[in-house]
Length: 205
Image (cartoon, rainbow, N blue to C red; front, top):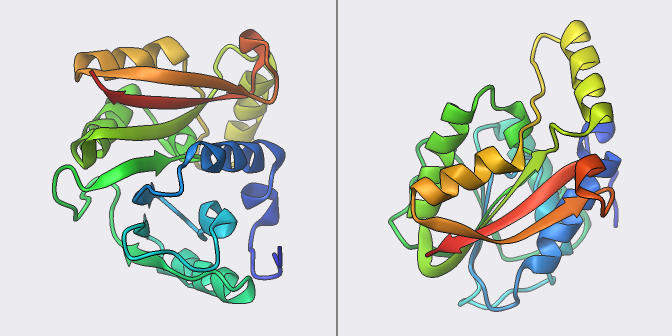
């Protein structure tokens, strides 16, 4: 893959970020219509085939015009076709209910400051999932001492905090809104306590 167009390589190509993105794509099926929420520079779709069918709609949405332009450059550099990019707000998604087979939001919730904000986002992501669709999100693991220390040190150096969350809190959000977790995959280590992140797949009950 040609990554010369990727900015902020430490962030977008970090070990956890890359592992989460790769595992998320592995869970996607060839026939699914997919929305990547907060798609940034589009690296999630870098695994896509060069051409997609009309039935398999691939869409990315992000509020940063700069990152969306970077995504276009990455797609061009790697001959990736068939991905639609939209400039928009993840909390005001411009899609009708039950639009997508799979709604993906990874490497994002660590930037959200509270569970209340996460719940607001998840509810709208569930809204646009088809009845048999799947939601795929990821959190950094609050139980991991390394993650807690790393994010604490980050908060001392940077103006914006990074947040880790507990899997139980996210599961509770799904249960309150009649979704259930179909898969919980530890990232970085198979031992859940010291996993660096969790990839969570959920569907309607």
